[in-house]
Length: 135
Image (cartoon, rainbow, N blue to C red; front, side, top):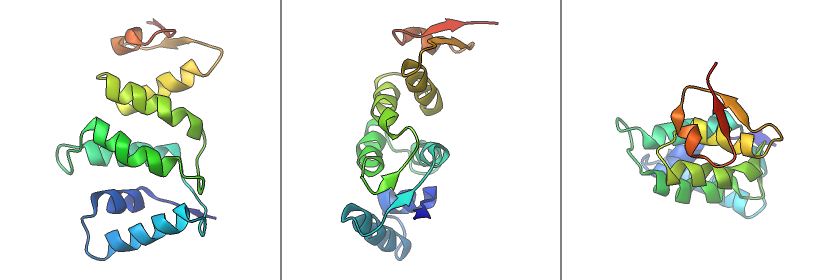
């Protein structure tokens, strides 16, 4: 099993390179067909979201990022810690002005027994069930 880096997701989703994009498409198809199993990390997913959403590079909308990336994350051949959390992460990310990392952290908090967070970020106050505290 090989590690899947952010640039593979980006080349595939952006389809912006004449040789790398088709090669990434072929790899994704092999994963979809069960010929390849890969693993990746939460940081890779965060990097993909950051790059695709950046106004200086691709400027892709939050909803489009969710619609493109979530099906890839959910492929059985893609192994990822906290994989089941990503549906909620993207729900929070697209439904509010919360940034991706905070959406991820909020989804983790929701799934834990401890529902409190120390933060100055008031957007956590809008997420039902999470109690924000300031130090």
